Image (cartoon, rainbow, N blue to C red):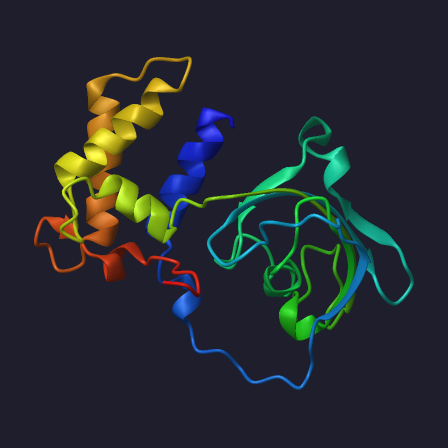
Length: 217
């Protein structure tokens, strides 16, 4: 995966850990999901906190006009995003849960799980119901998973020190073809602690890290 994308996802997940803790409004509407194709062999399905790679096309349900096509963006590469943390609209976070790599879905998303009364930049009118066709290519471990927390927590004390995160970042920086100087690495490290070490004790706890725990945990 491209280094700048990995870093952007890593930092955005560190900085917006409380974004999904907002009070949820009750809504009688729901996301409707139609499975168009599901592989016979499906050993791993998508869950909150997973990193997904997918293509999706968006249409206005009212007249079928297309407002978005991921295949025409970024030279046609599928989109990478973390599931369940607000990288996409709420309706897509819901619609793409429990998907297999290779699965295709058609989903109907009501306004309350899309762009609501405001619409979006002239492309999505107010109170618009949306339809998406989705094809999922890959499900991988996300940067806020319990597995990643354990990988960073090398001394197994259930908290992350600056030394542990620095080591983790160093390994990730080494994957990049373009060398990064020490001052850049230190700036990233300081930014992570500034935004996540809420009690300023020099460590990041599981709660501050906002671990996305799977059901078995």
